[in-house]
Image (tube, rainbow, N blue to C red; front, side, top):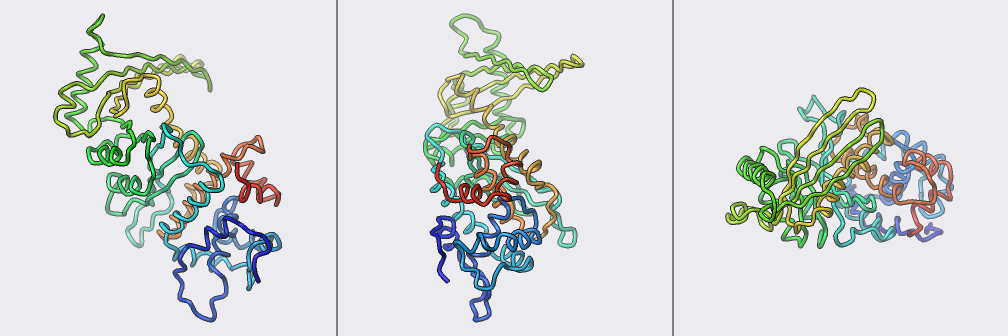
Length: 382
């Protein structure tokens, strides 16, 4: 039976290659399993048993645009399919759908934050596998997941970040990465993508770290026209504390640029952060350094540094609080990577919707309760 209503989501997921052996007793079309699975995650399902129950409850709803020749798949079918589907193929089709329907590709100058997150309970001692670690790219302005790459069991973020960057269209964007991604090869790759970078700098790059820290000490001692620093101060109050951020920006020194090791290096950044707890009067200080290919515009660089934490607050924190991702216990690597992708795209869809003034957790429940709201999330462009 042909779908009764056209659906961009169904069209996108129909392009995912079916990894199953094609035979006469293949009961469920791949697109049916994937669409019900994504909708289930969007509406609050956290495992395969819940996906089956959700699908059976909403079977009449899904028959509006899916064939479902044998009804809703069992939880074992959901499990087998998500373990077999190629994560890269699923990611390509779903992100293409999201950007097409929501028109949410990152705009020129937008910050794209890249950071990793560990799914803490996905370890498998029987196979000597640690918990799955995923590196994600997050467009901070519109709350959009741009892609993810799983860190290989015998590797780390340094190898996963270049793979993720290779997947992305970053032209004219500003890529921010924490200290793990402060590598010469990664900086060069970002520049080759016609993008700019702001990379956190720590002692893992000892030579450059020493040069930058000494350079700022020298500049802070200078006065008058010989001082090259530009300064921006921000004060914020909230959550029972006050926070002061002092951002200093200076052109990279000739010594830093002369070697040519850091392609595109133009500026260095110093951020001094002080927090005061109102109740106790306790004070904490933090000093951080960054390198960037952007010109020495202090407000823009200060904003880029702040926006990098959007991936922690807007994505990772939401995944743990609203999606219980740290409690997921699936062990199969393909299966958990695919479910994690659905979680991240669900966060993007829910955060972008402005028709309900509520948090992601509440919107997720509303999508499960209200078919019209679910249809709006899936089909209505914004």
